[in-house]
Amino acid sequence: MINPIRSARVLRMLVVTGTLAAAMLSTGCASVYVDTATKEVPVAAMKKPAQLKPTQVVFEFQTKGAPNATATNLLKDGVLAHVAETGLFGPAAAGSSAMVNIVINNIPLSDDAASKGFVTGLTFGLAGTAVTDGYICTVSYLPAGKSTPIVKTARHAIHVTIGNASAPAGAGKPVDGNTAIKTMTRDIVSNALRDLSFDPTFN
Image (tube, rainbow, N blue to C red; front, side):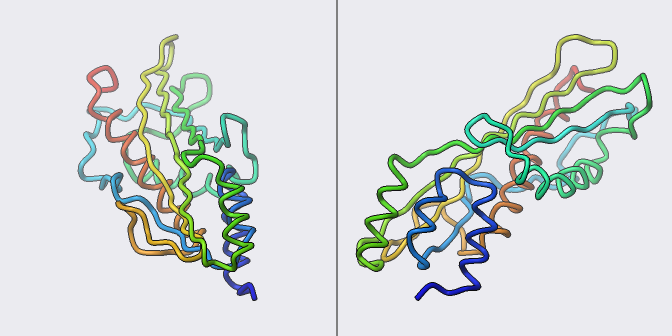
């Protein structure tokens, strides 16, 4: 019998991820892990500019390159608050602002995740499997009056084990889907912003 609390968490995760959806719906025995290779960069580790420049911040979440409005709405406020915490940009000013565009794209890393999850469901968890979704964060900073942006990228992953399967190497402690996606987002955005902060052109 599927745990209703876990099902609610899974459904919340599904608004964000594409590859994991069918696999996680096939069974209630899913565990979610944030990969540990990419860790959050503290604000203190970023290089502050000598002068804050007015900057408009735009965020979008994508699934396989296509806009995902539900996930964007779920994560947008957190991303904008995180950007403000960094102290890298000044408040936007009408007509004279730079722009920073943050895009997180969810891409599949596991082959045939749907069929694997289906088999696990049919065997009631005896045939365990692991599914991984990858994420690429692209931060594009366009200074006011310029036509060429400064672009930085970072990568991350979320793992899901279904049924009788061990956590993959590099997986952290199991968490609920909501915590996983928000942790991944903060980790990956902080890495891309750190790289931007040390770019000589940005400073």
